[in-house]
Image (tube, rainbow, N blue to C red; front, side, top):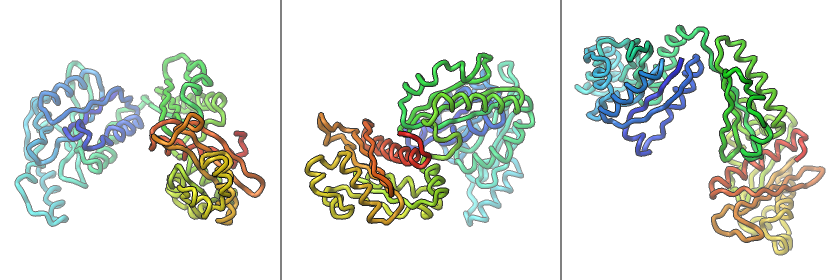
Length: 421
């Protein structure tokens, strides 16, 4: 089965609200075997909404609509739904009782607009909303010669998720036997998308040629995700194909792949540090504390993260980490020598097993021909040795920080796993 997601609201079109509903609904539909082929966002305009409904009903087996179910004048979705299905709004006593109970619990005085929330299209199946006032509405229909599901949900994410997961998905899953969609996502870092594609080579070597699998490259500041999607009639067969595709990608991309699950690099590094019972400190210049921020975003990071130094100025590097002033004078603050001294100084000062350091040029100013914007040195120190690695990352200031923190974490990952870098 195929699906279309329609989100409604002027606030989405002007960028005032980030559209998180689309991503959640798409993930949930895929989980029950509905392959989402399109997403559409329209404003609070009747003709635009109707056009989107007609287009979706022509092409999709499942249409999910969110937004425009509130009590104010610009919430017109229910009215447009009635026009689309040639029906009328009627009072639903169950919904009315739910709305009254909710408002009593919250000590909100009864208003005529609240009663309007209990008005639903006569021909719909009501999907209860336990966390808000606007119910979901589902239609089983035949439009444009196509049988399908048409569900209308509130735009408030918490309300949409509750109705979607507790009511609509179970109904949908019952009719989805023999239709399976599965995904496998491998996260890579430290290699540009173009070089990764070159390493993987012929896509058919991963997906086969029967048309049931696809491979997508999804680049971002932290690396490229490889997403394999399989559509099969049997779950076991789908999982078997995904496992085979994953093995091929692992063989081709090797150490550039750091995760086949949802964990980020800082989570993986945390697992390794805890397993090896190592304590770490970080010393940062160009990343300004962002590396420590990422490491400490992981629950339980206090098991291994001991201290972070943001030594942005030369004086801070000298005073807090003991970097020799002569190194900065001779090589500059952005140099392999200073990165190594920062890492060694952080390890000694914090009295930890290992330390990692960053120094670079985030831009947009400060670059030279010899040291351009985007230049990064990462230093690493343990009880045996101190080493550094040079990167040329480019990007604007925030993208540079993302890439720089990722590069430092990836270097740490490789050290902990014994991978040559």
